[in-house]
Image (cartoon, rainbow, N blue to C red; front, top):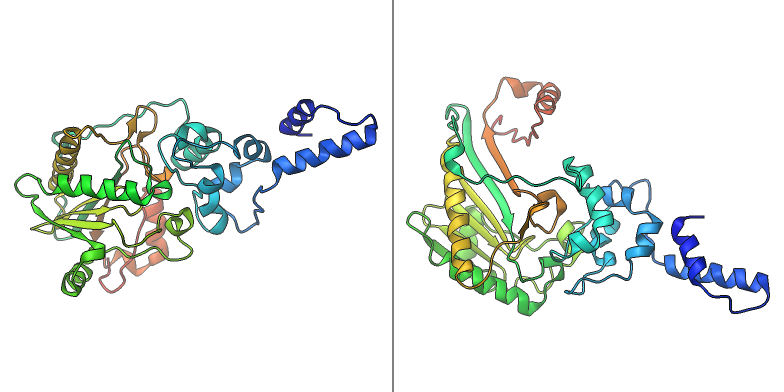
Length: 341
């Protein structure tokens, strides 16, 4: 008998002098408590499905955050999509604390980061040295991260009013960017066909998440495209997605291999946005354990991912060998066979 079953039996007072009837009643109460536990199959490969025990489910199934987010909503994306690796989403900052018994092992399983650890964050671009890669091999460089505004639920739990509030706040911040980062904010619901085609041609436009995706199952695609937006600077080297997976998806990019310059632009942009929202009484979600908070636990910490598109025509001729080399270096190759990159 599991710990939760023992606790439940102790908590249930006898209501019948007949011992058999009492046992039956206890069993029925236990079944009711565990009703709704997901039916995982061998195809479910997520960390959530591995670590969500019946005891944890029974303990947390009736818990709600102040935004009304529940365990059921958190795990839905992993239940509906067996192929996902993480399989759980947060609806607000509280989710990571109230549902820590499932989030903590998932985070450690994904990042190798224990629940007792303290996050270290250094976003000072002057600390980056030797950050220029040879342009003869590097086609382009890209750095991106998610940021979320404290005081609003995350996209899976947000309301229409909250989503409008996030967009207005970020539109205001992005409309006052410093020199070199000035640009235009586009509301997806109000774009002209010409603007939409331009953003598609530039590979900037994000689409409504379809079935079989983390966002659709998590409920983050509701009311699409209302209160979603895209910002890019005039040079098209800095891009922000508003109200997609996170409140902000920030991307700095350019052709060539100057990683240092791309990171500097990213840091300047993030600092500018946060300074503006702080002046209005807001700040980014952050704590000393999780770092920057994101909808998906895979994006906790700095939330930062850096990538370069590299031309390696000789090495990629044997793609299996190439994958093996990348794996040994803890790199993830994403091929573009037409470019040999």
